[in-house]
Amino acid sequence: MRLAFMGTPAFSVPALEAIVHSGYEVEAVYTQPPRPANRGKKETPSPVHLAAEKLGIPVRHPTSLKSEDEWRAFADLRLDAAVVVAYGLILPKPILDAPRLGCLNIHASLLPRWRGAAPIQRAILAGDDETGISIMQMDEGLDTGAVLLEEPVPIYHRTTAQDLHDDLSALGARLIVEALDSFSIGTIHPVPQSENGVTYAEKLRKEEGRLDWGRPAAELDRQIRAFTPWPGCFFEFRGERIKVLQAIPIAPAGKSTAGTLLDKDGTVACGFGGLKLIRMQRPGRGPVSGEEFVSGMRLEPGVALL
Figure (tube, helix red, strand yellow):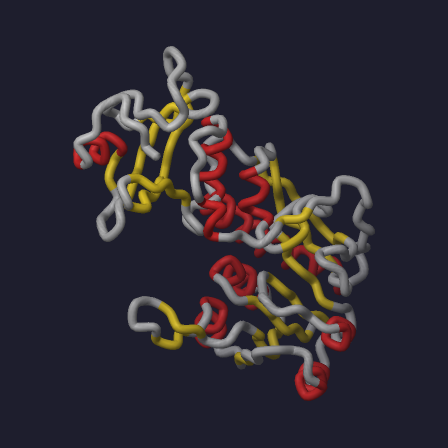
């Protein structure tokens, strides 16, 4: 099979490597253009771009796929299929229709739940017990295509977005090879998605990381696990934006006003229960434990972290 691979972030790299190592011929890799990164704002190629170069595969990074020139260039590859993993550009119909077997997408949820941009984070935030990988045959809708393969992954009570990212990236790499092997010889058939249970995983916004002590501790815990490492969670205190990198919900004795520091270990009263702060970070400083944060700020139980 002649393939193109379309992806950008680190999540996509294991799939590219698995496809190549399984003997498939990748004619070209499409990825987002180099972007300014790090303190020097130097133009930096995407993780997929760097991986493709190491594998000796030609890389294309158009800023858009809407022009007829791009459609012709893609059609000229004479592809059997294209594999799409977190590419970041919308594929117009001429692109979707160009490969003989269409475009296959690795999506990080069990469709139709969590269609859209941030399925990993939204699943944790919602308190889901499981998520997974769906290998989908793409159409013009937002993650509405028929499913070729899927496999669930449990979400445990301490699972973070980074944990799920890594697990689902590896699972997607395995399943896409299985799907290509079976699809190419006609032993797998697309199954239309159900119209029931559809949810949408909206793109993450930085302000969603703000912690509201008036909410239940269990919800704040899910928020921190879902938004670590990005966009991160925080609260404002004494003119500083304090990052909360890790925390654990607990059931403190008695009831206190939400936002009150309960002890010198860094436990904060919430709308229901308490949140023990495990790792914190003040602006311009390194991470510290909750206890070190309380000591460094010279805080006493009873102070309001507002």
